[in-house]
Image 1 (cartoon, rainbow, N blue to C red):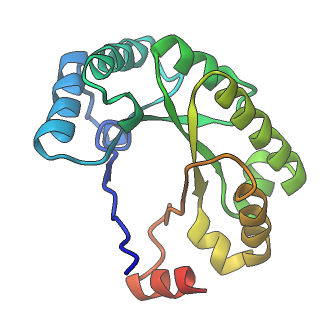
Image 2: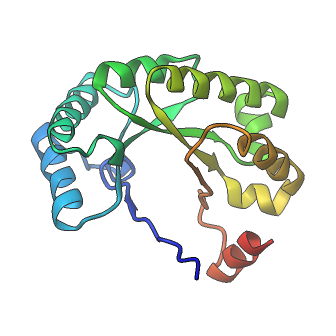
Image 3: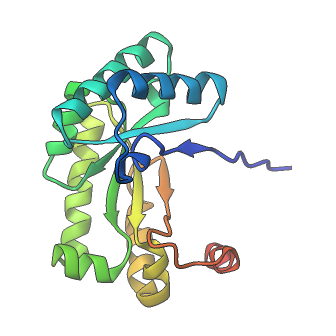
Length: 192
């Protein structure tokens, strides 16, 4: 019997901090990370977005220093961007070993936000993944707005998935960015 493991990735320290009025200090971020990994035993923790602020950098550096002493570096992740290596440089300096690369999972986001073709986006993603690998950083990818991509531009999503499955990525994450899918729709889309 082939058993699949369900992984839990907590995004409180990255996504939760986008909530109005929520901002964690360095010591709070470190304590929450420690509790998530050691007490709650979550598999992975996304702790920040790359290149946001100097305070965020110091918090990530402190967490990565602690993680290095406790063998958790590959369980701590940072949201990164397709930005010509700026995020990668930031992560190298902070000691980060895993990036969660934010990419466009719908043709709408790609053409209206980035104003690029799929081929242009894929070439830039490839460069970021290669740069990360050269610097010892593993890559997971988010397909931002994947749910709307599947509803409105499934051809693009399949083209993207065909491309990304040939890249050295560990995980492909398919977020329902705007919360438009029901659980049954999600099941049906994933079963396709």
